Amino acid sequence: MEHTTRRRPSIGRGFGRIAAVVVAAGALGLAVIAPAAAAGSSQTASEIGTAKNSKLGTILVAGDSAVYTLKAAKTSCDDACLKAFPPVVLPSGMTSATAGSGVDQSKLGTATTSTGELQVTYDGKPLYWYAKDKSATKAQNVSDKWGKWSAVVSKSSGSSGGSGSGKTDAGTGGAAF
Image 1 (cartoon, rainbow, N blue to C red):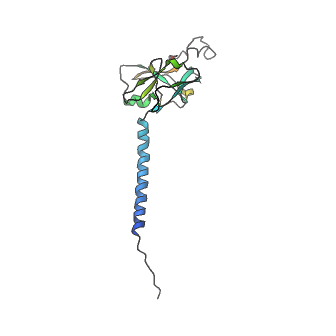
Image 2 (cartoon, helix red, strand yellow):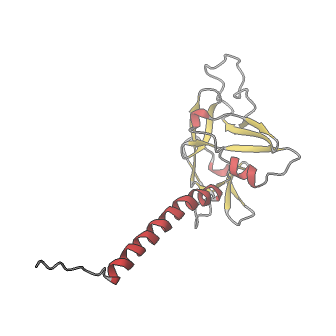
Image 3 (cartoon, helix red, strand yellow):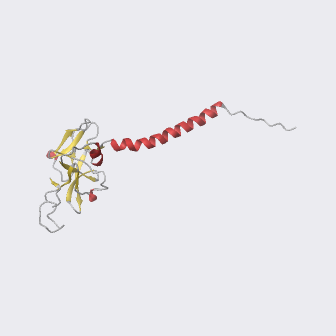
């Protein structure tokens, strides 16, 4: 007669499987929560530089993205506004931004945000990114219910080539520096 032995599942193996399922579920939960948390967090930059934009001329950038100033409308910049145009803030522990090539260090400053972060300013105006920008070459001026957002452009950016208008600014309403 052939004898077969049945093995009882080990309690340890059962807990191991349950633990694996719990860890996987937790990782999935974090994957779903993390993008939402990231959307509300501030972006940081420690250096403000310049880049060429085919439409606007020479513009201020933080990293690879154009920076903007706001000429406010009657509607206050709320959470939705700050999601579309996040403030350029300094990394934790830094107290001032560094001027890259073509940027006047004496015009760089900071302002404290409502969350206590240090927002980078240029010539006294707070700087923002535009969430829809993919790169500095895609920078554009934007008007919305919060006001007019202008990429910060060089005063002399329109003097060579371009539309041939001979203007000393980009001619697009950007905030000149």
